[in-house]
Length: 184
Image (cartoon, rainbow, N blue to C red; front, side):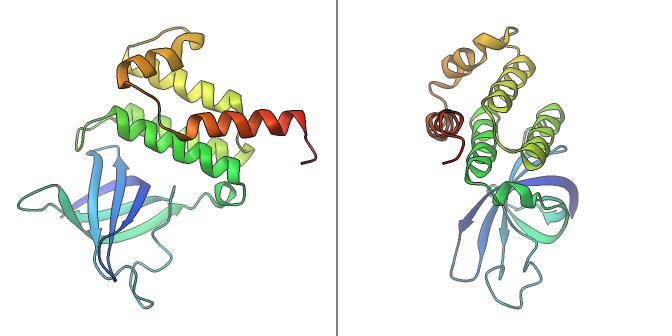
């Protein structure tokens, strides 16, 4: 059994009662786990698996494949502020999708884990902003060694990945609309 500090980046239905849970860990990078029975009302995972939660997880490696078994999850940061604002949820999702597109499965990236944690904490506390999006992209490009100048980060990431995740344009549009019409 392995133990990791992890951030929940994605939830997918596996069966009527189980979920596939994607985690970004400091020790093991991106890890996919099966949370068996997590969708049952009296599951031991009830209330412990939600997007952007930071948790201490216990999991067992699969003998074959990359879908491991989640044994336990103990949330340490729930980041409720993100779920209270749609733009914040979009931006946090963008951060997660961008990292998923950038790193390989089960390759440790502690600096990127720290970046995601700081980015989610910032959005949780202050909400979404164009500045937060640009800062995250710049830090990611800098850590990947593909861009040193903040104004070139998005282009460098786009060149390296082929394209940036879809929510980016929607986030920029919504945030620019909000600054034009602050009462809307």
